[in-house]
Image 1 (tube, rainbow, N blue to C red):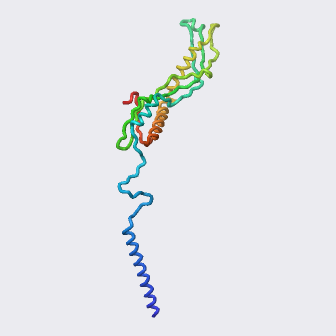
Image 2: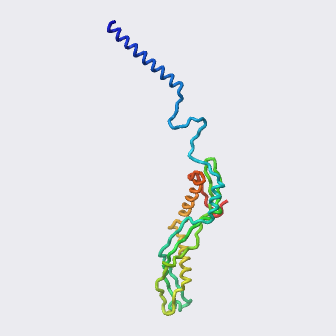
Length: 219
């Protein structure tokens, strides 16, 4: 056999091998279904990251909490000045001026018994209606609250009225808590919303799918 014939034989053989491989691959592709790795092949399957939750269960858990503290504002060394003097000219001399250093805290609560839960809507969101946070009467820390020596003018018999002092401390602490610098409403609502999300999660819902509505009297 000539050299040219040998070369032609080998060329034909490799062409035949290539044709066979292509035929096999085509057959396998035709009869093997395409699958994405890690995805289920069951018909009608839809992946979801949320779970349904019954609004009545969430509301029952919230209502059972009654009134619950959602924030506690600590106040220290609040200076309160009290003056006690008779009317008229005599008051300029016969008077008592007291500087009070008040310590204590103001608690913020939410009345969970008024909570209303509805939904879910078409997007799977629950709507939670909550009553506005309320400030409880301020609590005076009687161990730390104290007064400076009162200025008495010529009244040598003056002395501070302890009951009036602590009443003034309570009023002063209460009023101070409403100062916008503490942002008490927003902070209290944020704490309450975190509490609700934990309840929803515990009952099988998605804590990210909640619409909050704050109102004096939820409906």
